[in-house]
Length: 157
Image (tube, rainbow, N blue to C red):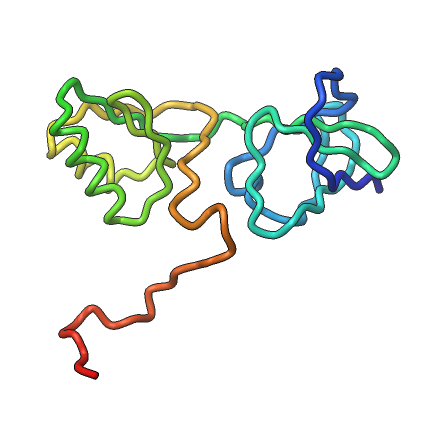
């Protein structure tokens, strides 16, 4: 099986392409089927997120272009900067993956979040779009932050 494992910057036309969902693009090891029907694999460093248009090289020198597939997302928009800031706060408080544009939020379709943002006053619609959320505060490093800590009163030392 052909394995693509090295990120490359090349202007060459890729021999292979694969369309992957956002969650598939977060996996370090995944079995894929290219758009032409070739079974292959991607083996990259754990924690690496593949973006739309990134290219990977196989050990045989073949290039694979990763495409962000259209997914079921919600698009929330507003003309109000204050309302947009409030929406960002509430979506972030839910720890949802979100793509932030100019006065618009895109997130994987979630009817509860849709209702919450409509109640705030945003226009929300279901769409089929490629999804490329913000990387998050810890994406560049290997630090992860779970929520096993206590949010109650501070402890005295």
